[in-house]
Length: 72
Image 1: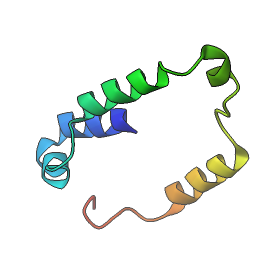
Image 2: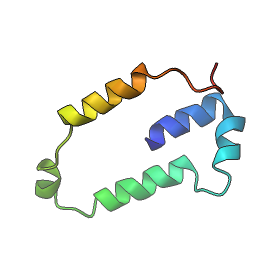
Image 3: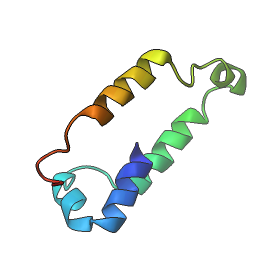
């Protein structure tokens, strides 16, 4: 998710910067998240669920919605 925000900020800086002005930058969030993930044992991470049918159904539902007014 942070990667998506980073790409959006690079392609349309004003929109993202104004919305997240009081939040840490995406690069900082990515670094912090990767550091936090690194504190977990690899065996624990390997057991995590990567994807589910419920997530894919939710994703399909979101994609079926009309675009937001701002994206026209």
